Structure formats: C-alpha cells, structure tokens
Length: 229
Ligand code: ADP
Ligand code: ADP
Image 1 (cartoon, protein in one colour):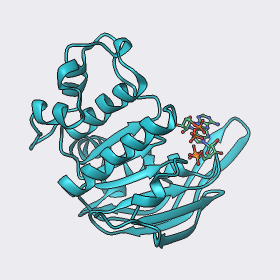
Image 2: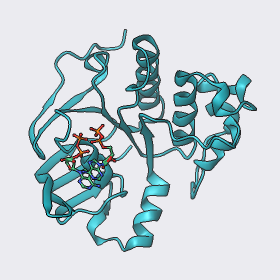
Image 3: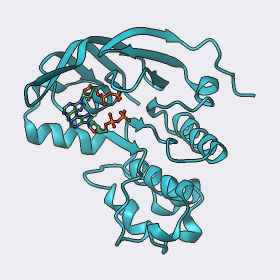
C-alpha cells in the first residue's frame, strides 16, 4: 500500500451560475496499509475526495501526496499513468462492459500494470472462476461487484478507492463484499478507502474520516474495530 497525505485541498465546481465548494481546506494523513471509511451526508464531498486522490479529478489548490508522488506536479499523461499503475476504483454501479465476459472484463483492469496478479488466482479469490465465461447480465449484483473488484485488483494496486461499493446490494451480500475488501487489505497490504453506509464497516475500518460541507471535520482511529481472531 501507500501513504496518503493531503494538505489544505480545495476544489470548486462551477455549474452555470452556481459555484459549489466541494472540498474546503481538506487535510488528512493516512498511514500505509490501512482501511479507512469516509462518512458524511450526501453532497459533503466524499466522492470528490476519492476522485482527487485517485487522479480522476484535479483540485484548485493545496497538495496531495500518494507514496512519493505529488499529484499537482503531474502533467495530464503522468497523472493517467499514476492512476493506471497504482489506483483501483470500485463503484456502486459496477461499471462492467456488457459485451465482455467476466474474464475479459477483468483483463480491462490490467492497463499499465507491471506486476499483475494471475487471472486464475484473482478470479478464484473472488469466487468467480467457474463463471469466467459468463456475461454481466447473467450474474447477480453481488457477483458483478466481485468481478469489478477483481478488475480493480488484478493490477495489484497500491490504493483501492471504493465509492459506495455495497450501495446496490442487500445486507448479506454487502457484508461479504466488505469482508473481501478486508481480505485484500490483509493479504496484499493495499490501502483501502471506502465510502459506505454499511454498518459492517465499523468492525473493520482502522480509521474514520467524517466530512461535512466539503470539510474534513473529524479524522480518528476506530476504537470499535474488532481485532481478527
Ligand atoms: P453520491 O451522493 O453517491 O456521492 P451523487 O449522486 O452526488 O453521488 O453524484 C454522482 C456522480 O455525479 C459523482 O461522480 C459526482 O461527481 C457527479 N455529480 C454530483 N453532483 C453533480 C452536479 N451538480 N453536476 C454534475 N455532476 C455531479
Ligand atoms: P458526496 O460524495 O459526499 O455525496 P460529492 O463529492 O459527490 O459529495 O459532491 C460534493 C458537492 O459537489 C455536491 O454539492 C455536488 O453536487 C457537487 N459536485 C460534485 N461533482 C460535481 C460536478 N461534476 N459538477 C458540479 N458539481 C459537482
């Protein structure tokens, strides 16, 4: 995994006449190897925070450093390289390509990877090896999300950014997805940031970040974390 450091990050969206401050002087420090949950009401800047850390979006001012990479120093192509090499994304709506099989969808995740994991290993890990030739429409929601996780993981990313990964799943299936993310953190040392309302997160997150109106209002170690038996 990699450490994540943000210092006084600001990000404004302009839509027509309206200016929205999505991030206001957001600062944080996340050590290597941790699972972090980001909490806060809708519109508080959670997705924006993930997007700037992941190199999907630019910010207006402040600094973000992931491992040794200072993101505002990177030109467009280098930022894309950074994202492809080091960052895995998981979304609420899976974003699988409907015309590709499970295996082909996971292949999409390889991008610029230098040390990819084995296709078979990763598909077995998410319990989708037997369904590798299926298409997304033939799968349940939980299965589709496991494919999306495999696609994010096959490049062996340093950080995994998850935006409501269980939002479209029932309770039980959602818990299993969280368990899988915990396994990834433990097995590969991946730094995992998760936006979620799923209660199960309380048991596994090392750190909690709380946002309100674009500000990081709290950032603390999770006392309720259950130590693995
Ligand atoms: P959530 O509340 O789950 O974070 P939203 O529905 O607010 O999700 O946003 C979904 C996506 O749409 C995000 O990627 C966000 O960046 C984008 N988005 C949110 N608000 C706006 C807006 N006012 N104009 C354009 N895009 C937006
Ligand atoms: P959250 O993830 O906490 O719901 P977001 O980061 O999606 O919050 O959004 C923060 C604020 O920025 C919201 O007011 C949202 O409407 C706005 N916003 C997000 N993305 C866009 C966008 N692409 N264009 C315009 N406004 C946006």
